[in-house]
Length: 450
Ligand code: IFM
Image 1 (spheres, rainbow, N blue to C red):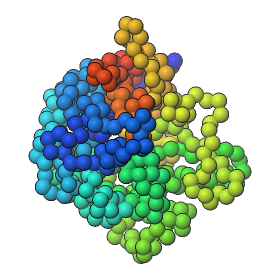
Image 2 (image 1 turned 120 degrees about the vertical axis):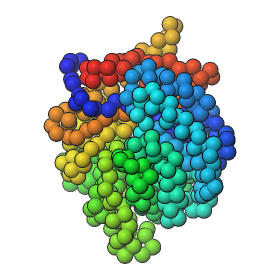
Image 3 (image 1 turned 90 degrees about the vertical axis):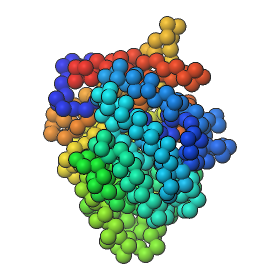
Image 4 (image 1 turned 180 degrees about the horizontal axis):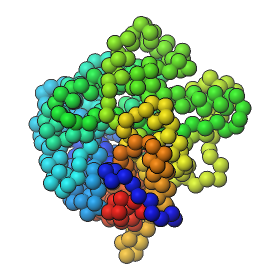
């Protein structure tokens, strides 16, 4: 392993979770039903029939979890707010008990010296809004602004870092096109419209959050990847470009004032009732509301091949040969993080970037002495930190890094079969154990490097 890697003095070391994945308590204190409650309660959607009904029971154990974070020495904690705890039916009235929960959490974090980074939407929309049409309907973006307003008014005095949305690509395309995430629909047109309304929800809420939370930093988190062609051939090159457009540029370009990318808009425009040009003039300037940072969730690269027709979407993604893969089946490719960060800064000149998620799923559990020797996670993080450091050395304004995830949790369609945590969770007893990677991360934080 390389020694003496030193990060900038003000670099922020954190860890991340999301509400549905850890909280449980799906009906507590006036919470409404979310699309993930409905989706997991419908048979056949989730591996082993798992649900987030209990998850890590963080809703009741939050104080213990904050203490564990403090023990790790993390400087920041990225968590999300469950929209249906705040607005059980999607629109007013507000559920004060839901706000109080997050208010206590924020106070406790601040008392422990941990800076809260709040994500407003990490996929658990109130079911009532889905019943009214969900993200494919423009009114959902308006409802989101009301929600963002309510939360930022209540927490904005103490929360100074806001992330509007987590991974809108996943919400739109995995939820409405592939149907593997809630709400489980399989309609491309709905997915394309959902993506647009998610971006609109983001853009409309940025000024509202700024108004309610003076001096706050506001951004959005995208799942971004590196799409590489399987060969030097033209069809593969175009296929890789399309995948890059579909996952990365369809979101990045409008957010950074470039409108939707032309190489894809021809294909997607049919899904907008009046076509892209007509509809979007006001929308595009709203979506491009200036933000303070971009959150990047990076896990792996995609190698792309399309022998038949480079115009197919999504193009064929082929398995990376011989390299190491995590238990999600994702190739370990730290170089991709360096490539991605450099490209983002080079292309869009983003003033500040955070890695808001990076991590890996390995199921290594406690040995007979109760120790979790997750050497592969440690090595994954080591190599990705190193790649991030290289990008910083070359001028990328990377401000911080949030390891996904603080603890093992509900991994969406995979249920509890995938463990991404720094902390082991024994689901039967809710016992938590710091894994070896967590102890190593503690050291990295303490030394601001390794
Ligand atoms: O667990 C998810 C998280 O909710 C969003 N980003 C990817 C993670 C791993 O799949």
